[in-house]
Structure formats: structure tokens, C-alpha cells
Image (cartoon, rainbow, N blue to C red; front, side, top):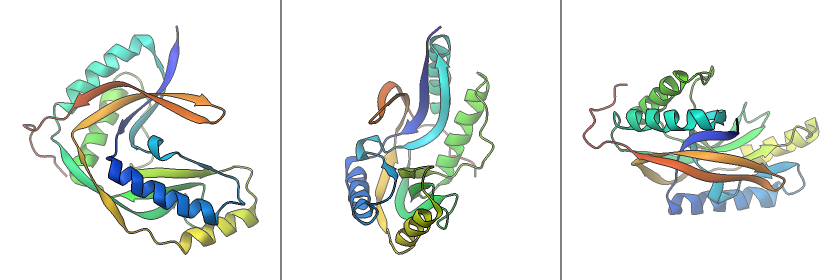
Length: 200
């Protein structure tokens, strides 16, 4: 049985992608000497759930579940801005731009987490912290490089970059290639303007 790597995500409008590309370029110029893998702007999205391996058998059930879950959520907006890192700015491994988390976004993510759990996909143990990944620092980076990267990040200010209106969610396939991942959209489902308001 063939399997694919898949995730569920929200796409970003072109103007937000453009501003994220500008932030990335500025950081790249300052962090050129360091072992960092940058995410192309066209690949930046807001991940709601990373599924990992999905069998073709599960794919149809997954799309059915997603459509049903989307029907219970109304469209909403979120804003993008501020620079951050995981696990923190002093030990950056993942460099990201933050997403303001309205209750509608949190409710949607929670609903998707519960829906996919019904198909056996493990629930995320860490609290959902919505973010847009710009880059990943190589595991081979030494402590001196990490400190230098941290210093640049802490000296960089990223303000408000724009807002996104969410009317759809997408299921993506991820194919890992030597030059980076290639994402293919497999399924899209719309949120429901007539759904009841989200509960905090």
C-alpha cells in the first residue's frame, strides 16, 4: 500500500508572502555564513496539522472528515508579524514569524486535531502555537554559530506584515527533495459563513 507525507494548512495571500520574502531576504544577508535552510516564500503556510504518512486508503476518509469539520467553522481573519524562534531566541532552531491567534483559529485547529484523531493520527502533545516557518537551523550548527544567529535575531524587529482572511483549508502532499520540499495541493474545502460563532 502506497503512502504519502501530508499536512493540513491555511494558505497566505500574495501580499503577506511578499512581505515574508522581504523579511527572509534581510535575514539571509545577515546570516549568510551560518548553516540555515531557508523556506521559499511560495512554501510558507500556516500548518494546522502535520499528519506524516497517510495511506491512499485513508485519503478519502480524511477528505470527508475535513469537509465535515470545515462546515462547522465560519471564515475569519488573522494578522501576521513579530519574529520568534523555537525553542527560544537564545537557542534558535526554527526561525518564524508569529500569527495572532483569534479564537476562530484555535477552534478550527482543535477541531481538526480531534477529527484526525478519529483516523488514528496522534494528537500533538504541545500546545498549538500558530507560526510561519522562515528557516531551520542545521543540527550541525555549533554553539558559537547558534549564539551569533541568536544575536542577529534579537537585534531584528519585524512589525505588522499584513492580515489574511481564511475561507478555506487545504490538504497538501509533501515530497522531500534534495533541494527542499515540494508541496502539492490534494484537497480544498471551504469554511461555512453560516456556522455558529467560535467558542473561546
